[in-house]
Amino acid sequence: MRFRRFNAVLAAAAFSLSEFSVAALARAAMPWETNQPIVGVRKELYRQHSRPGVGVGAEQYLVGPEGRRIEISATQAKDDVGTEVTVRFSDDNGRTWTAPQKMADTNIFYGDTEAFEASSCAVPFYDSRAGVVLQGWVRQILQGKNRYCHVYYRLSRDYGRSWSAPKQLKYEEGPDFDPQNPLNPRHLTTNNGFIGVDVVRTSLGTLALGVCGVKAPTGGPEPGGELFGAVNFVGTWNGFTGAAADYTWQAGNRLVIESAYSPAFPNRPVSTRGLAECGTVVLKDGRILNVWRGSNRGLKSSAGKEAAGRKWFNIASKDGLKLGPLEELKYDDGTRFFSPSSINRLFRHEGNGKLYLVGNISPAAPDGNRPRYPLIIAEVDEDPVALKKNTVTTIEDRRPDQPSIIQFSNFSLLENPETRQIEMMFSNYGVDGTPLGGDSYKYTLTFLQQPEVGSVEELHSIPLAVFGRRHAGDPMKYLAEMPRSGKAAGIGDLLLLESFLAQQQPLGAIDAFLSDIIAGGASQAVLETDIERPARDGDFLSHHLDAERIGQVLVNVLHGGGNLRIAHGNDLRGAALHHAFRRHQDIGFGRRLAGHQSVE
Image (spheres, rainbow, N blue to C red):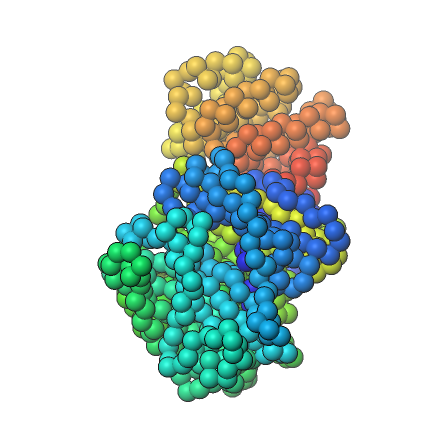
């Protein structure tokens, strides 16, 4: 029951707008192919793997006030086994770091008994009221095909530099682990479980942690294989000081999912590997939302694969203890989507207060864990719970020249407390054609405002500087005066440049102007062309050199922190964008531009 890769949860990136596969054209367009993106994405190579088949990874988390961070790095040559593990710390929001310190590998031995021990997918939670960092932890005893999992928690009083001995979370009577007798059957077969991702503070002030892979209330399958239950543990700080200071924990009711698909109940929740790796968040009304990873591995029929290839959720009471019934996670218009057996994260953005989900969605029924692309972000509607379909945005997708086994999953995620950008880290396992070969990347997501782009008149209600038909007489003079004019003051939100491409102005001047505006705080650059006017001889689109230059202009805008959106794009379906998107695939775009024509 190995749900995770070593101790690193890793993240996602960008794709080329211009690359559509034949299969994509043959099916209905997916939301992420047509939506206006809700985030801009910047991708950076973090660590490069140097040995074929051996991946490298890194993850970062916030572990205290003032941007205190922890970073864990490792290599992976064997599935789910982290080696060459190191940790380092930052007290200034990642500006400076301590020297890396070696950590233990994730797999250790008690005599001849092998065990996997790590925080796995569990995100550290800084409890400002108690002044400690709390993190889930798992021990998995490996015996042939059996994996006996047990859930623990640990505490740090120095922002992750040292940790208390892990303490087991229990929902039934059973002995603790004995390193001298690791195969004690009474321990192996009681209190089985695997940690979820998030610890959250409930509206009542307690903490809640989702746990999967527990026994069903009726006993369920034999421990050591796949278990199908889930439970929330709720912790209360005892208020003591010194060594006695700790949490007391209570287990809620256990929830179960069916393990076999039945055509007689086609809409009943089913997963052949139970519920796993839940993302957890507090809803605005105080209830607790868990979104669980399911699986259709082993199912043969198409109906079975489609029924089980989903994400599942439940809503718990405000105290987190009473789990409501399982439901399928769908779009807000009631339509369904597929998802492989992979992790998801839920988070409420401190900057805008909205709730988001990051995870994998598939165009067709998955096959167990695959495909783990694209990786998307979407806003979550909280009542009723659903993904807002028109917000689904790609963070990373597979390019046609990349192996089909590549994956964009197992990511870490944090919100930068200074910039409010989302920082993610992941490894693109499979990029070299082997299951584990991959490089580590860092992605920065910037949330974008989403004005309706259709005409200049529709944009007048948005603070912006307009350069278009009204200023066509002397555009460069207008551009030169814009930064000093009252109209440009506080531009911050949006820059609209309309039809300047037809003026045959020096691209260097426009490039410099755009760079100045973006550096001054504009979050978007919107290029609008005259949709009625066909391309003429002498236009930049008619000349390859000009196309390359304007492509670089657009790329410079994005590298400068702006987001490119193009309305009425008939004139822009040519070599300029082709150049920009083909040569600069490290920038995140949406698959369509402002709801208009797709780039080919």
